[in-house]
Amino acid sequence: MPLPPPPPAAIQIITGADIWTPQGPRPGQAIAIQRGRILAVGAADTLAKSHPGAQRLDLPGGTLLPGFIEGHAHVGSLGALSREVDLGGLESLPETLGRIRTWSAVHPDGWLIGRGWDQNRWPAKAFPQASDLDALTGARPALLERVDGHAAWVNSAALALAGIGPQTPDPEGGRILKDAQGRPTGILLDAAIHLVAKSVPPATDAELEAQLKLGLQALRAEGFTAVADMGVDARGLAAYRRLAKAGALPIRVFAYLSYDHELMLKELKRARPKKLSFLQVQGVKFFLDGALGSRGARLLAPYADEPSTRGLWVTDPAKVAVDAAVTVRAGYQPAIHAIGDAANRAALDLLAGAMKRGKPALPPRIEHAQIVTAEDAARFGRLGVVASVQPVHCTSDHRWTPARLGPERLSEAFPWRRFADGGALLAFGSDAPVEDANPFFGLAAAETRQDPQGDPPGGFLPDQRLSRLEAVRAYTAGNAAALGRAKDLGTLQKGAVADLLWVQAPLGEISPEALRKVKPGRLWVNGVEVPLAH
Image (spheres, rainbow, N blue to C red):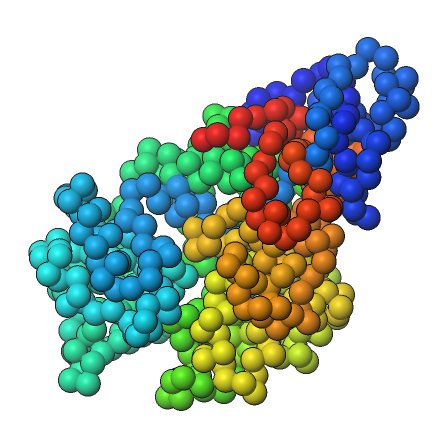
């Protein structure tokens, strides 16, 4: 597959900035790059003598890092945001309805699609109702996903189109919330969302390609040079392959297939490429449970604030066990969504079983790993399972997580220090567009376990904080190792690809508050400097 654009053949020496190493920033160092790879790292004078004809770029201080790797995102959904009503960050139901009213007036046709609402931010913390939407939308169907994508708020027109009524049973892996009279409220959890979503007209091939490019460009603007796209269906994969063939991918893509049995078996018959390219199928994304915010995460004991439920099994763990083992045997990587403590235990159990049949070519991953018992947190390192976590989830969810779990098991929440101390490989991401993709927000969250307003004081379960060095590693070398590309990506060392990020700030010295304000300054992908703007 062609690489866009071809890296220059001339040697270039980049000096003037602190070079980020596994031990932290080192002043007085420089790097030489050629044909998209790092040729050498060392003192600027030494490199100049070794390569007398090289071009020289002198940066005005700051820090030169490996390009960040987004360890968990949904690229197509990120790119589609411009066509949807954004309901993120709103503090009440009336404010949310006002945003919908304003957006609908400008975009009056077709389905009303949106995402980002979070009832936990609202005073009553109650789910909205279909009737709340009906007065605004009338006969126009509406599908509005919760911030985590594991619940949807729909209106009566959408319920009618899907044929959902009092007698409609919950689908396997999902739940239709109903009122005391048995009538659907307009809230659908996990697999139940598909009952309505399947009626939404699909994007055209051209629209799909445009969405993927927009999503990748948005990530590049944040300083990312590669992304793990979690959950790519057959049409999305075909669109990616068209873009790759045209040389139109702005950053590297590691695609994890949606859990579609036919797609999985078809793709896993191919040998996984050994050579790094701009597009590679990396593995399969499996779902065990839902999300904590919508009480779909599967817990070992009932929810403290809703004792009638322990959450959902979105997919039967026995089924995931079979297909995760198939994925491992084919040389690909299972990536298992597990948020609740029961789901994480089941994921570890089934991965342990899969690995007993032979050493995997790539380390299996558990995505999110939010609520994990101390016993199970220690198993990640022992088993060699990647803890793929999103630090901003902790700082977004800290206000209501105690209510879901109760005081007895609150210590299970976001156990990053336990993962690290147990020898687990940490890989950072954002879950964009669920959270802001900005990696500097993620770094500050990992270091402080506080939101941008400084809450909670001292940090949420502060004994689980990480150092800045650990956090940067999780966004660079940790992600590279999780992808099986430790020699190619995420590091400034001889032979690695020249995917580079420069920031004006002295990254090893600034406060967490200043860290949140850092912006990418310059970016190189495959040795070619690229624009940061969309």
